[in-house]
Image 1 (cartoon, helix red, strand yellow):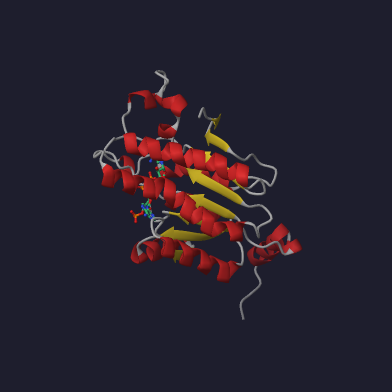
Image 2: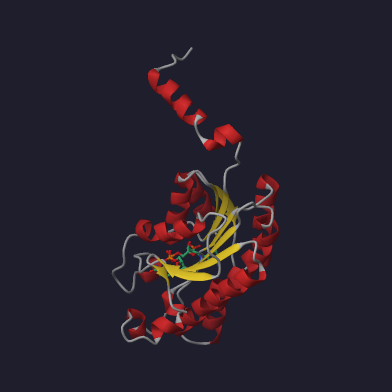
Length: 254
Ligand SMILES: NC(=O)c1ccc[n+]([C@@H]2O[C@H](COP(=O)([O-])OP(=O)(O)OC[C@H]3O[C@@H](n4cnc5c(N)ncnc54)[C@H](OP(=O)(O)O)[C@@H]3O)[C@@H](O)[C@H]2O)c1
């Protein structure tokens, strides 16, 4: 039989002192879309570290299962451009957890380069319509949470204030489809916040980050740094703000 060491006694006492032990508080149930790499992966990792039960919503089964195994998270197949996939993913969370506390709409594409109809449809389908698909499927589960929170990973490239301000780096960058789709993502955040006052909806500019999306631009800080801001908005208290657009320094201009 295993010896009860000083260390194991200390661990037991520490566990008994936690709120979770004392009041049987359930774990926070969180879904992060596009969580197999980049900002989504790091956000999921940090939320697992905070003891959330994290579902990584990933469109490719192999990439999703690998990410979940690496993170200690759970995998749901989720393509934000596919209604059936989104519906089935939320049904899986529902049958396992019965609710959703935190939704991070992170999945996105850049669409840098071509500006034409098919590319525009693809970029908007992913970056804006994807938020609508996932949020609509998640709303019944979010309503069952005592502190429901949605974070939409938007971009300052979608800020009219930033792209028209010569003092901002966005002023000199041209990315018509990406910027327009992120402006839509931010507006969706505001409109959802108005329509659902019992649920917090906030949009985030995570900061210029070195991921596959920005590889062609060069530079950017590590995803782990930027994910901290996403995690901050994903872990707001019940009386936290809603309908805001923020970066790490606070509210951003629209
Ligand atoms: N990096 C930055 O500097 C920066 C700045 C501002 C905002 N953002 C935003 O941050 C978010 C994450 O970007 P990132 O920089 O981490 O880019 P990334 O490394 O390219 O990751 C994008 C993620 O989105 C997923 N995705 C794309 N289309 C999807 C779909 N239809 N269904 C499900 N997942 C899909 C990708 O999955 P696959 O592996 O299957 O393709 C991947 O996991 C995006 O919304 C982006 O616009 C990034």
